[in-house]
Amino acid sequence: MRLIFMGSPDFSVPTLEALVAAGHDVVAVYCQPPRPAGRGKKLRPTPVQKRAEDMGLTVRYPKSLRSPEAQSDFADLQADAAVVVAYGLILPQFILDAPQHGCFNIHASLLPRWRGAAPIHRAVMAGDHETGVCIMQMDAGLDTGDVLLRQTTPITTSETTADVHDRLSQIGSQLMVRALEKLEDLLPVPQCKDGVIYAEKIAKSEAQIDWTRSASEISQHIRGLSLFPGAWTDISGTRVKLLHATETQGVGAPGEVLSHLRIACGSGAIEITRLQRAGKSVQSAAEFLRGMPVPVGAILG
Image (cartoon, rainbow, N blue to C red; front, side, top):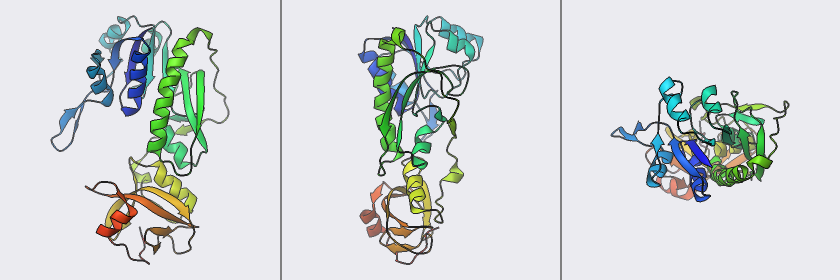
């Protein structure tokens, strides 16, 4: 098929690669514009832009798709379909209607659960036992389109958002290839009106750990915000990101250090296994304690 690909972050790259490998003609790649990053604030292209340019594909990064010029440029590509994977811009109706078969989206949840911006984070934070990928025919609503294909995958009690993100990225890439191969045979299924939950964008205010919550809630919170933005707590006056933790036994005041990095919660306790101080690399609990001892009885805040 003659395709337009629209995506920006690392999550989108496997799908772009899979579409090209499957023999589709990707006539243009749309992504977010390069943005200042790093100490020098040099313009940094998105992962999709970098990969597309390495593959010799045409890349476009308009700031908006609402101008007549942008819409004319899009329509002139005369695409059979557009594949959208975490692009980052709302698609106006003209763009949705321009390709012959419309626009197809990879959404990283089992719709209608976790529509919106942060479906993987929210699924892990909520303690969901499974998640998955839906291939959706896009419409003007927020993740409200008919579903063409879906595939589930479990979320284990040790997995972080980063772990699930990487797996869903691969699942989504192969599912999209299957959907395009069988497009004429697939029956679009309207989403159920029950069970709609929105995955709101992660706010900075959510990142601080509330030690009065239960061990299971805090473990899910830590794993759900790992690696980014990272749940944090105050240890001896230093803000530290906690990137992985497991539930364990223990009783104490909320936030109390029971031993090493075993911390009491509102009920139960957690064992912190990976941490990161500002400007430092990710460390295991043992590595962290060698450089920054945490006394038993201290209260984390």
